[in-house]
Image (cartoon, rainbow, N blue to C red; front, top):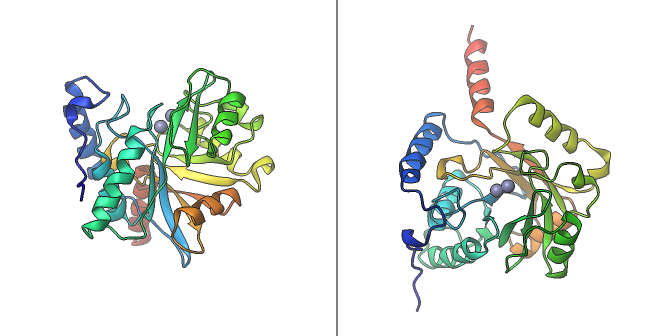
Length: 266
Ligand SMILES: [Zn+2]
Ligand SMILES: [Zn+2]
């Protein structure tokens, strides 16, 4: 039987040595602001479907640590969506299989394969794919290739500086990210809120994702799916039929709840 072996640090995409210290500092700061609250009802599963690993140039997170953190938070599924690189996603699948065999994570934990693609207008997410895609194509062409390969196309953080902006309305996406842990600032929050309520996306799956580059950033935003059963096939069916909603548990929201709780004591 082949055992999972963690990817060696030397193959990581981020070559800056100072990033190890930076990663520790950010994780420490995130720990200080508490743990995300994951809320689900009966028949629902929460997932974080946009997380980076050491196969991205901007993260050194190990896929194994990502999976264990997700399970600890109460998430039922994950997608490692590295920049233009499918290796993190492939590694996560092998890692989850090994963790299940060793009974360290639940058998029903779902790992969806995916990748984040640089189009010529901004980032586009692809789920249920087993390959990377050419960079620098138009959003239309990128989404066409994702669909041709059998995947689903996600409009990730459309109004972020690296998002595709108004092209979100012109291309046949399968889901749109309307809550993103990497989105800060009142203007971006409002643009996301407008997207969530835009009638053109009324029937489309709405995603909340952390876009976490650090382990303790996982789950700051998440997607809740109504699933008949906790399987990858059911997850795909829920996305295709729009049975996904976005939730947020960003540190600022948790602080507001906490302070609100104190003010109620007066
Ligand atoms: Zn991105
Ligand atoms: Zn990302």
